[in-house]
Length: 131
Image 1 (spheres, rainbow, N blue to C red):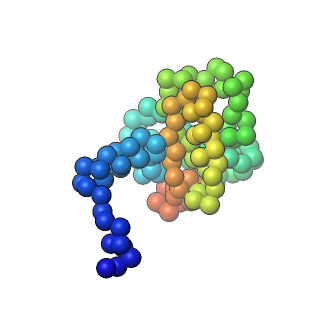
Image 2: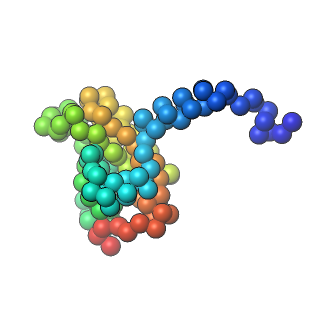
């Protein structure tokens, strides 16, 4: 028995349920890019880390800059809670998107994380704004 099969694979139903649930928490760079390319934008994309200067220099087109450290009840008071927000950060080495998603969910917002962030966007070969 290999280390891969040491633990038995879950039933097909359980596997499908797990991944269906996982997709309720996240989306990927390719899906976000496709939505913007097709004009099918039913979410708000948030660059949730860094300084305003860093954002101006390099960000995903269509994103707004709102660092997770500023996400408070007061600062988000006028935001629409019916909108889906997609948050991203610098990349796999960064947990800023997770922090933003947690704060937004705690404040009553619908939110997903875009794992990979700027690094994932670059890996896909997508263009950045500000460069």
